[in-house]
Amino acid sequence: MAQDFSAMTKRAVILDCDPGQDDAVAILLALASKDDIDLLGITTVAGNVPLGLTESNARRICELAGRPDMKVFAGASQPLMRKLVTAEWIHGRTGLDGANLPDPTMPLQEQHSVDFIIDTCRTASDGSITLCPIGPMTNLALAFMKAPDIVPKVQEIVCMGGAVKEFGNTTPAAEFNIYVDPQAAKVVLDTGIKLTMMPLDVTHKALVTPERLQRMKDLNSPVGDVCGGMLDYFNRFDMTRYGFDGGPLHDPCVIAYLIKPELFSGRNVFMDIEVTSELTMGQTLADWWDIQEKEPNAYICDDLDVEGFFDLLIQRLAVFG
Ligand code: BDR
Ligand code: CA
Image 1 (cartoon, helix red, strand yellow):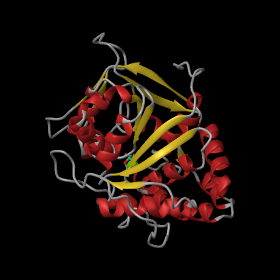
Image 2: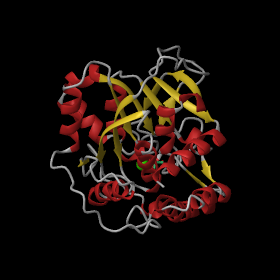
Image 3: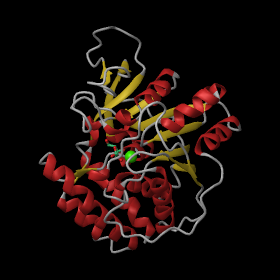
Image 4: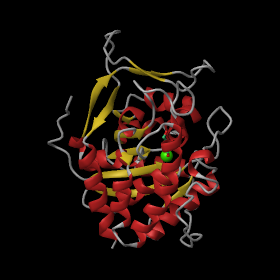
């Protein structure tokens, strides 16, 4: 089902992330897309690896992109109520294994991610900010809990998370970002802000096959080399575990949606999130067939134009030279 995007203009975006190789590509895609995205700041959260690594990895990627001026903030170091679960088994010890980037020299902002989100929203006009969480949603939940007055300032939340018709990738029921902080995801969902979600149903189609990886390496640039190296590393897990033809570029789907939403299709549905059962903790339960006839509260993507997505990504990565 297609949405009407005719009135869309350049978006003012806060990218909330836990780099992570696929987060890193999402950051690069956002930085390469100045005509489509006004990136106000990058907020980081504990997720794929602990906070000290996610914030320094975000800075490493900004420096790689020649953007040491970008504001990078550190946020929550643990989920709202649960013990932090990390994913070194996928991303490696550093979170960016395979990238081989030096330690960053650009500063980390002193302000906490949550306060940056609140202050930015408070000074914005109604319906003008797009929030893009591509890690656990702890920072966003804390911002809405601390400052519920910012809710009207948000135009849309476009997130990577969940698994609707797919199985989970962290438990049989749950996808990583939602599993790590399900209570936070529920707080965010319950704000009632327009939510667009990229679950595993769509991201498991955005596979970095050997041919697509080669296209990145053929950019013959520092960005192309780093993407080649880190995605080579990232690919190995999903190719071995799932027998996929490549690793899924989960998080860049969110940024690609901001730029070219017509690449994606999905459905407006009612969704809820499991926050009590240990067995199915973090499951995203979407009423795909409208069995309950409840008012939809999320637009959930389940398909994309894969070639269009990779053409967009590689064209944009080429701007770094
Ligand atoms: C999500 O979890 C992380 O491992 C990735 O960065 C992505 O955001 C996929 O389940
Ligand atoms: Ca992520």
